[in-house]
Amino acid sequence: MTVAKKVLITGASGYLGRYAVQAFKDKGYYVRALVRNPDKIKTPGLHGEPAVFDIIDEIVIGDVTSPETLTGLCKGIDIVFCALGLTSPDARHTSYDVDYLGNKRILDQAIAEHVSRFIYVSVFNQDKMPGIPTIKSHELFVADLKTSGLSWAVIRPNGYFSDMGRFFSMAESGHIFMIGDGDKKINPVHGADLARVCVDAVDGDKREIPVGGPDIFTFKETMDLAFHACGKTPWITELPMWLAEGGLMITGLFNRNLADLLSFAVEALKFDHVAPAYGTRHLKDFFAELAAAKH
Image (cartoon, rainbow, N blue to C red; front, side, top):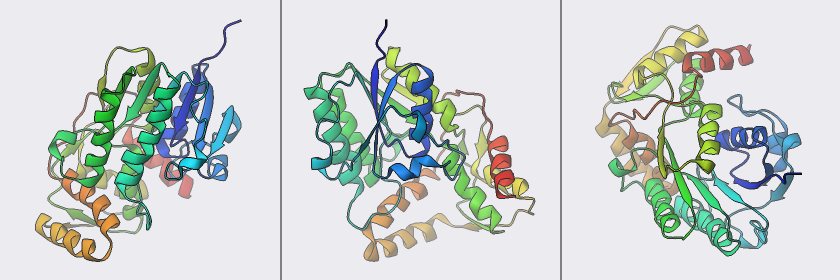
C-alpha cells in the first residue's frame, strides 16, 4: 500500500490557498492546512473559491506572526506550499512581518524537518517594482529560500481573478475610478488553473515559474467586462498617475501599512503584466458567475 505524501499548505483560507487544497487532494496528497480561522473555510469565498473544511486531513490553527502557534508545523511533512501573504491592511503587522518573517518561520521548520520540496508563491514583474514594500518582503524571503539548501520552486502569478473581482465590485456600484489611462495589459489567472501549476511544480524541474491566464486584456477592458456582466453602462473616470501618487504620500502620513499595500496596486498600473498562459478558465465567465451569485 502506497502512503500518501503529506503537504503543508499555508494561506489555506485565501483565494489561491483553497484551490490549492482541492488540487493537492485531487492528486492524492494528505493535506495539513494552516489557518487562523477554520470557520472561514466552511463556506465558499467571496470570489467563488470552494469551501474546503471537509476535505482537509489536518487543520492547524495558527498565526505566522505568533511563533508559539507554529510548533511542530512541518513535522512529518514532505512538501511545503506557501500561499501566505498580507493582502489587507493590518494595524499591528506590516508586509515585512508576514511576507518575510512569517514565511521565514515556516522555512526554518521546513529546513529542520528536511522537507523534500518547498513551493512558494511570490509576484510577477518583481524586478520592475523592487522598491515596493510588499515586493521587497516577498523577495527577501525568496532569497532565503534559494540559499536554504532545500529543493524549491517560486511561482510568479501576474494577477488572480479575485483581484479582478474588485473591478466587478466597483462596477456594481455603477462607477470606477481608473488610475492612468488603463492601456496596460494583463492576463490574470483563475485560482483553480494556478493551483494546478503549483501542484505540477512539485515534480517539475522548473524553479521560477511565471503564470498568467489564457486571455489578455487592457485594464480598461477588464473594467468594461465587469460593467457588462453587471448589466450596467460603463462609467469610468480617469485619474492621472500623479494624483494617485500624491494620494499615497498623504495616506502614508496617517496609515503607513495601507499606503504600502496601495503602492503596489498603483505601481502595477504603470506597465504590462503579460505572463506565459496556463489554464482554460476565462475572465468573462468568472464575472458572469459573480453576477449570477449576486442575483
